[in-house]
Image (cartoon, rainbow, N blue to C red; front, side, top):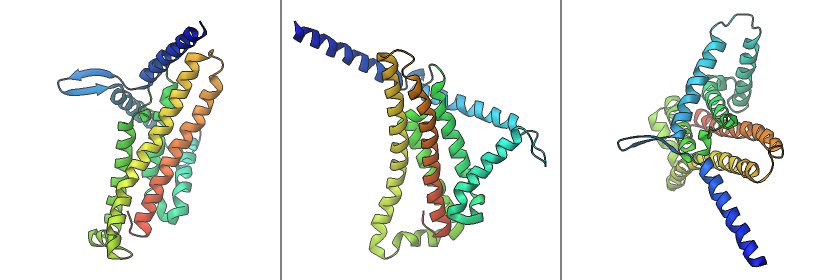
Length: 240
């Protein structure tokens, strides 16, 4: 009798877990011929539109003497400058817009999971991979722009020629590291909260959701800091 009850509990838990995993995974919204439009694509574009409109509304009436919302915007700019300057000095402001774009966009995507029914795009590996590849490609382009193509290639052979293999591998590993770190943390966080909601009354997971705000900020911050670090290497040392 006890064995049957235990099997029943295990079966129920297995069904609940499968249902939870299905809930936090992207699903197909439209199928246009061979092209599949998933919820990740829809949510990402929706976030881009909302964020674009919001930033336009907030920045359309900037004044020489800031006040109100403009003070918040300038604090955000100074925050991004503060991330870049320790690595590149005042020159870091030249590329701060890249870090700022990554930070705001990823933060916005991370926080979108607080909207009922929305699966945050950063819990999909395709999104984090796209962000990571974009970051690394930009780093390569910045290195070429700062040092020229010949010096860019030359750094693959430093400090001595046989190191070219290790240097190339390092550049190939970076996007995987960026993508998997962001995806793993966001997917795991969403999975844990969804499990709590399914197994425990509503009031219990609420503190965990509040921690989600902190974790979402931290993950956007870490991705941005790593990208800025790579840019600093490209600008200061000619590495990429």
